[in-house]
Length: 169
Image (cartoon, rainbow, N blue to C red; front, side, top):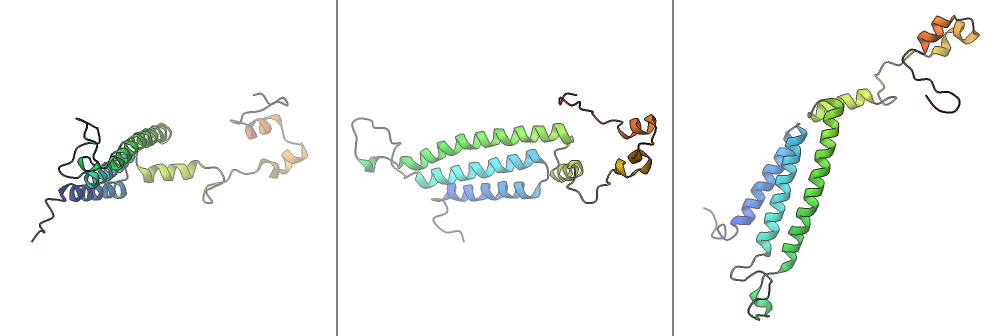
């Protein structure tokens, strides 16, 4: 049997359910956009919980009307202020996450976090111990002794940008 306070705490219960849905979405999905949506659902659940705990039945918003200055007539304004501040921060964080997601998609052509992680490891020079290393050109005895021909030197530098002494390409 459900307790008699469930109806009184219906918004708190809804906030807990929403938070659980958001957390599950954040943890179980690999798609970056779905992770951002899960994070926003969690934010919304926290705001609903704060608003439900700050509201007192029978009281009004803390705006003085009809010269009623008694504190017993109004709800606590601090949870409402926290919710508004949290919404502003949440929008900023969401914008930042979406911007980073767009940049990751432009670079790796995927929204899958595992695929992006794998491609990022393959792109990082010197960080992957399993990556094939390019042979060192100075190990070639002919090239080191200066006996190599121009074709060999050009082949060794093919695809590389050369920089002159002043630092310009």
